[in-house]
Length: 515
Image 1: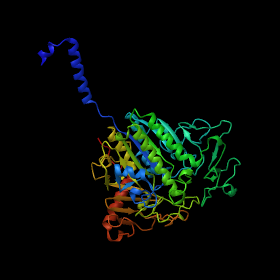
Image 2: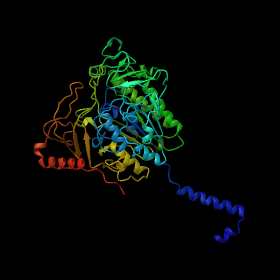
Image 3: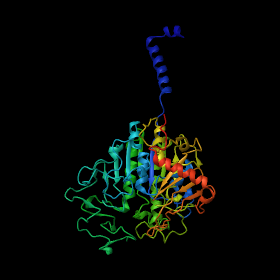
Image 4: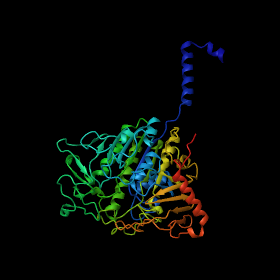
């Protein structure tokens, strides 16, 4: 062969060598990692979508994800409320390990320390373009926030390359969007002031001027009126920057699809945290009445449309095949959560928690067991999985996907369940600590809820809390609805699970670092 090559003209020989080297380089080149789109719904229950059994509301786009990917029947948020679930998702750490990770007011400081490894910073170091769109609710700034100047630290300081966010929730002031480090559309001549203590300004409140409201509160939520809806907290100023609730889903969805369009050429990670179906539920008029279940059902239809817009964008740009889309919710469902939106009266047989007991705020399964769907057409075959997985595991799992090593201090409670997420294993994590008012632990078929004092049913929301002065043990394989406490007949299992929970609570890590 060498002799034959020696007799070739130099120009032809050069072409031959270049082609050979090109083929070798092409064969050795690593495959481009998938784009990752994490769609994070708000207060969406296990039974709120068709692929998990809903019969009274149509969710064709969410159902499409289930049909084309993996539907997990035992997928969880880390907590039964929003801020702690989001903290766990971002950091890979159980939120109960850190003080100040409960549901935050709208003017709270950032609770994720800049510089620590987050799901966004890890993926950014791995070469992904990272962005967050939607509900943040992890605090902003350090100390008192100046809403009229540079707002930092925030998402950009914990790994996101761009941000377009709702600072907290739709029912909390300030009712403005923050883009990167500044309030979007702010008129400097109309400065914003916000307070969760002594009232600021002289704008009307729901408590003092109920005749100005288009949706009245059922409990709380009676302070400054914005867009005909009274909120938690008081604010004044920023009128040009205030959102219109009916347009929020469209605004956020356009920002999310715009991020995909802008970064189609490079691997990207988009964290799209919808506001739907959190209160106040004020869907766009084109969705009003579409569900037959009132504003809450109509907000589910609107949420599904947002998912459809993301999927359509991926299809149009030819990105769908190599994009991992993960859809889930921050906690379980709640009907009356502060506004008179007829969620209870117009339920019409709909079961937001499906076969589960409890809901948002609850230690029962419906508090944290939520829709959990993964689609990646190039890699994942359609299936239904019973593997135990949690959103807290996404940091370690995506690190494995991106071939990144985590340090000893990183993501102490995040398990690498990538084989389960890709449908390559039927096994997920070994155990899971679920957080509500207290803690519960899951292991295989068993669930133990620690004893605790307090009401068994929340007066305002009607949700069963799961609290009991006695320890509770449930065999979920036989009793998914947690109707029979079998602690008395299984003392050894109670002792084992209590010891395991105590050990997890004592130790800094619950998941060993992969070496």
